[in-house]
View (cartoon, rainbow, N blue to C red):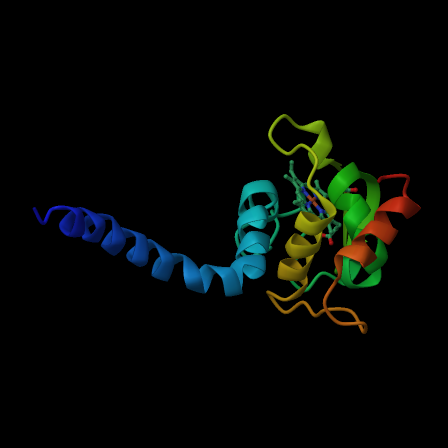
Length: 149
Ligand code: HEC
């Protein structure tokens, strides 16, 4: 009777293939999460490359506003933004809903916001702040400053 071995092998091969497939994603997961969250929560308005939409939606790519309001970005993600702003010399006076206001964008965690903002600040001609990549602790400090957990 030799069927225990083949049965074990039948499971072993897919399990190993799965393990190999998952291995690289462990290393790039943070970057991928940031990109995924951007596509899910932001690109519909700000565009796939952060280019914005005419005078309705300001760009995130190369945005001077983004660079000048680094320590408020976590709060903008959570609470949205409204009222007059100037981005790269263009005036906007619109409403960006906070992700918590919409049905599908509820409550991104500090870790998710950190990965999302690191993705935005690492792409499209943007640069991380002088302190380098964001940390979860830094995001939590920002969120406390605007009354968010
Ligand atoms: C429903 C459309 C919409 C979505 C979704 C959206 N935004 Fe916005 N965003 C806007 C609008 C409109 C403004 C301008 C608000 C104003 O005029 O005060 C803005 C402004 C901004 C600004 C400041 C101006 C700039 O361009 O630098 C940042 C930063 C920003 N959004 C980031 C994000 C991020 C990150 C996400 C995803 C979590 C996101 N937005 C999702 C519409 C949106």
